Image (cartoon, rainbow, N blue to C red; front, side, top):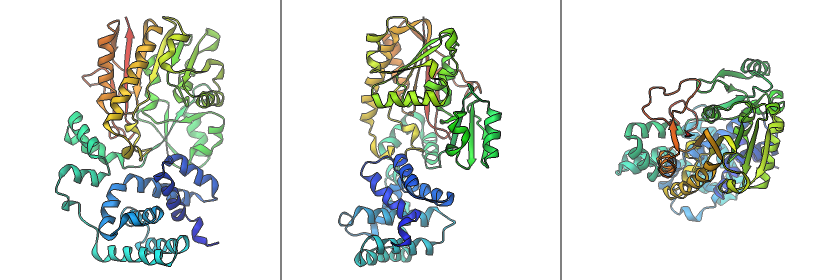
Length: 447
């Protein structure tokens, strides 16, 4: 058994090959970390390499292309090995080039055969001698941006059309930055100050969120393995996602519908606002039985199970189970393209097309329309997505309001008065605004 086959570089190549076959990056990484004994530094390098290669794949492939004459004839893992070598060489300043090349050649030798070792050695040395091709060689400006930022041209075009060229470039730049490790405090059992103290006592470095009053950002260390996490003092949730539930203005005795609830992050946030003794309850729907179970597990860990009714139901059929004017508040955190999450799930950029947004728009409208009759007069229905495209955001709200004159759009409130000077009522958070996930939140009140 070679020592090289348990290193972060070896494991990164194995993970990348599986992700190319359709595995999700975060699940594949978690499995790798759980299956191998690694110290914190090795875990960080593995994570950095896997996300880095996915994030910069189009750039790395552009740099590699002149040096590989028959790319379709090499094994997928060999290509991932070369891309990961170029990624380390170009993006990880602290690792000497010599170390990157030596270990890459060693992996080629152990994982492959002498022919693969010679091929990889030749490619690396040729790159070193010739230098990598310049982006200036790409004449088409959109293609150049696409290769520089590893973003599909269709998304670049849409962002420019919707937000202007400067904002588009700012978003592209921000999406290849590492995602923050953000937590939402569980007010049922703790306070922001207590959680910060508990984590700092465990050796983590923590700071307050500028986006959410219940948010903390961990800048050093891992919160997921702490006692405070196990006890349910907090949950892992992006800062932008934490803004959705406060916009609902939940009261302790409310009956609330969380129409698309799994895995239950926002469900438990709603439940923390409710009082079971006053009849407060959140009905949390998901279409899949295994995800309904997950909502229940999260509710138990966060000490709010007495206020959560996790239910297997397609949100488009909510009227079959609940009568008109049944709920005080409704959250439709709709299925969406997830383009606001590219920082966390970098492979999304290569999988989605504009047609996906148009297809999702129909589902989003269907869920809103099905939920609308079950809301009491004067009640609030909040619509949210984790995407940044108008087709799934503003366009959905405009179409819903045109078909439902008994609803009116309200200003989306935030505790920190975010974007208070905006001239539209919904709140759009873009990935470059606060370096959090992209999100859209609209509040609809029934007249």
